[in-house]
Image (cartoon, rainbow, N blue to C red; front, side):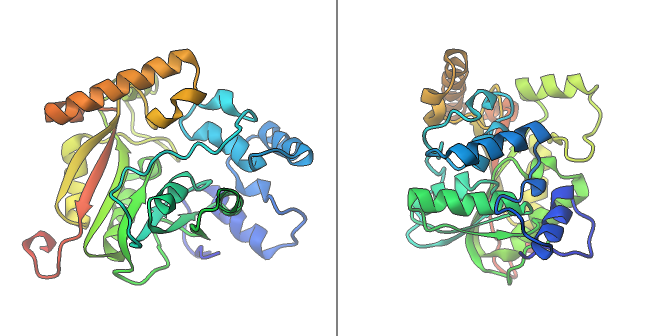
Length: 305
């Protein structure tokens, strides 16, 4: 538990995690530190009582892995949906996964050969990640921490990864979090951060639903490609954008077999567009989800000025 108790939090679960860690422990699940409804929490308790191959907390947190597209999987998983890490082989390099939730990408990085550590403000999610990692034999480790106040010395990590997290922050908190990524990266280290775009088809639909106003609280904020390049270049170093998926956020080809037939078609269409974007880079600007890939500038280089 490495959350600060004297700063405003992006999510109330951070405050509840602090309170839960310092109070009387009546459960190992810490359900009040999860962003779930009362019905979902009751479902976790019921699953915990019956047992099964999947951790009961993960069985419900999976719904937030890709919004409503994964909602049908609640309580029905028979394996942990861990995709291949979109990273080069780790070869023992240290990687930080920011906003790890139940540890999906931290485990993926560990399986790719990284010494992977995940951080998240939810005590319940972090403990679920630890249980899931133990079940699949992953060596990944976890801390309860805030992306805006990372509890690590400068230059600790060779790689930093984050998926579907910083998109929920205010502009000011996003700048602070990206600055923290730059601080904990070693010179020459690589950051790979998923962000939504302003002009993706699905993203335009969600923006239209809220009248194209700026996001509030933990709603998604949408960025255009130029804004992302300037943000990550200014706080970390030279940055390029790579398409992650089209027609949604979080679509993974490795999940196709556990999706409905209609969603499989969406995944196939997304993969087709990703392949086209490698030939025609302009398509990256209309992807719904992109990776901002940044290399930490060495001290004294022009990129730091």
